[in-house]
Amino acid sequence: MEHLDAELLSLRALGETPGTEADADHLATCPECAATLQGFQRVAEIATLEPAGITLDRPSARTWTAIHQALGLSPALAADPLARPGGQADQPAAPPAEVETPSTPDDGLAAAPIPLRPGGKNRRRPRLWMAAAAAGIILGTAAGWTAAGVLGQGGTPSAAPTQSGPVALVLAETPLTPLAAHTGSGEAQVEQLPDGTRQLTIRLSAEKTSGYRQVWVGTSDLSGMVSLGVLADGTGTFTIPTGIDLAQYPVVDISNQAYNGNPAHSDDSVARGKLSPKA
Image (cartoon, rainbow, N blue to C red; front, side, top):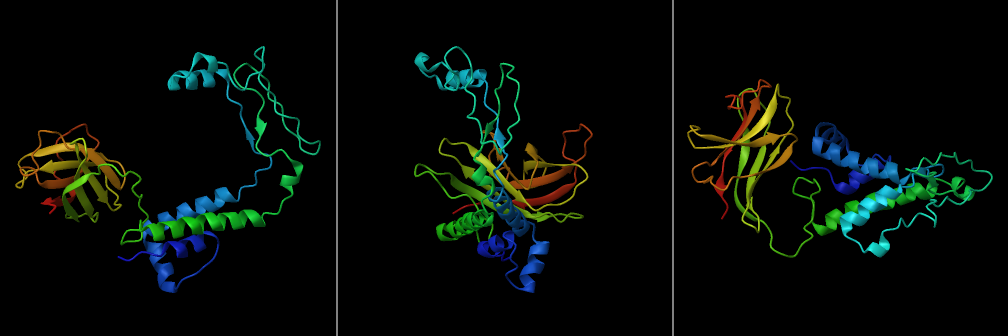
């Protein structure tokens, strides 16, 4: 299925209504495009927040102590950089008279909040520039995805590789076909990491089930099944135990398990596929 273009979705996130009626119908029925649009809308919402009046809490001295210990810094840097000589925490500069800043009692754990942008003039700045900034962020993100080729064939953005070292090797994959009384479908892929670890990645479309979804690998006749874990969302990655030979356990099975404490396979499979080695 061909999904909507990222730039079209970004314009919709900004309140525009580009595209055709067919595009609108697709958006109403496609969870992937709807999720992408929701992400763009969240970016627009954050980019257009009015910063006036937003305050940040000053961290306590114990916060810096924990950071200092975790990073193994020099003893010369042990003092809280936000504290004045004598143990008093720095107080934020007094804001202009027209802006009221509520005071917070200093109980030794946190000092008064620091205004994010205390200047009175910033409060009166027009919101037009913030909307323009949001448009730039969203459109720039969409254009970056397209130019970098990180939009899959379906149009859903995926992460671009950031490392030039060894990469995972795809060993096998299979489509996941829904079984009787179920509609969930997707795909499964086995990768071998540079350290030799094998991982099974499951992507399964949303489907309402009565229980939780368990991931299994099994023999061709399903006489032997090994549980790998619970698929909490539509996508999950599971480590394949070292002793499991996928030539003997080529079947990937997603089951609907009842909340009854019984770890055995429920005999109610949502979707299933047989791994094929990747050439």
